[in-house]
Image (tube, rainbow over all chains, first blue to last red; front, top):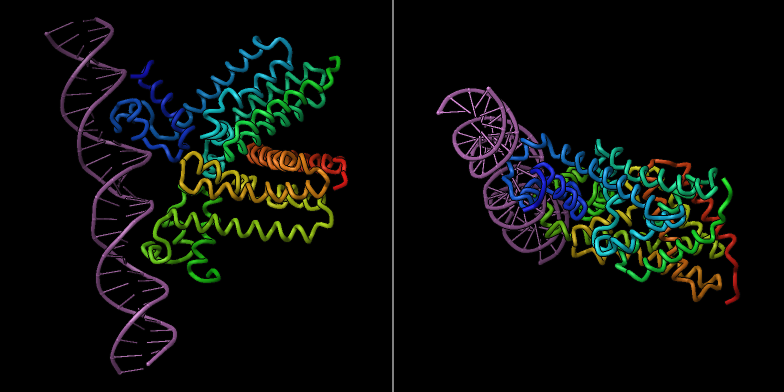
Length: 191
Length: 191
DNA sequence: GACAGGCTAGGACAGTTGTCCTAGTCTTTC
DNA sequence: GAAAGACTAGGACAACTGTCCTAGCCTGTC
């Protein structure tokens, strides 16, 4: 049904299911149904369920890195690039409204489980954090770069959580606009 | 061991375990171990696990309402009251750093599960939202009251999520200070 | 002291979980 | 065509899940 090697299909299916149902709530049977393989056959590709999680996190890290690299080319200015990030809230709204932010919800779940891969999952946040920080540096905010990056991260996390809870697209749209306005008003210093 | 009726002990234990482990991840056996009763005995007090969840949510709603009422008396001015809310991030930091925000994480989990009690859990958010809105109304921001309330809610949600992920108390402290500064700078209009 | 009802322990029940084994089927290489 | 290794289906396994039943215990009331 899917594409790529069986291993890749397992990772892809797990990636989506972990997002939609949560990690613990997703069973081998769920994944097997999607990939159309027998349940006992997983052992040949992954020794444990945690190994699948690690592979999923790695895939998300790779995907995120590619996305950030694309934004660097797509956006002419640092501000335009940061807006690419802000706008994911609208781009992925149909998913966020039902399942929240894929990064935040996984980190929260693994924190509650005190899972060994918690630190690895947090690296996705770090990827965005560093990338956003670099954009602010190029805007001449070398000293505040990380603080501003965290501000943008935190803003979008809060909006995702409340947008999800209240299922309110208009609120999210309004906040995205306000974040863009805030960004536009931010003075551009010289490096 | 605990206090109150057995039913109350079950709700108390479930309340804490649902927060620390998540709802789905908490089993009857977990609760039974804390309350020190036999597993099969739950049926006499609650027909299903979902009934326990409903009771926990109701308890949280009640507790929140009392807390908000206390803040109304504790804080002399609306700004002082809002700061009571902002400061929970520091007050409860030892829990938040490990388990996140109890309100946000439950709402997110129930959203993923598409659980019937999702709307009921969201009411805790609404309680804070309406209360914060009232404070802003009394500050003379009748028209912006709900928008400002959502801003404070969203701010704290974002900080809780990132503070939890990065396990960074200094960041949370700094953001709390900044929120208080922002609040102090907010003009007080006449009603 | 008999009786009723609230409450309890212990276990049965069918279903699911992650893990692991075995037997067999493909595909590749010589 | 034979041998080897990658891959697969199916099921066994013990542990656990939420639910539910039964028998018995306590604490009241008549």
